[in-house]
Length: 150
Image 1 (cartoon, helix red, strand yellow):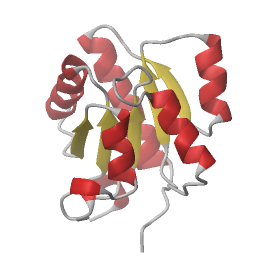
Image 2 (image 1 turned 45 degrees about the vertical axis):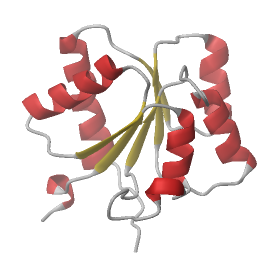
Image 3 (image 1 turned 90 degrees about the horizontal axis):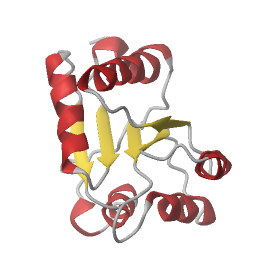
């Protein structure tokens, strides 16, 4: 199987079930068979990334190849997740793409200061979601070489 045919694991931390469903629907309709994992808040995401709690088994919680992170979530928001990752020196070596409703210059600057790979304001139509997913797939899984976990 070539790199372009590989099934990648995408973790989306977002408390909006409609946005999660949109991503799943777009990927399905586009014929993409990536492994999608949805987490409802930042606490779940940090547990997943640090392999804590119910995420200790890598077969049940595989290492992500891409993290999509919303900024506005309950319990632990995306900003705090980014702060914790940076403060702890966590070496994820996985791209984090902020995918949020915000277009605030302060949020954009903060996220890049925290080391995110990209900042994207969420699309509002199904067609725009489809285009976004196509671009993300082309860029992160076909064009870019991601670090392996060997």
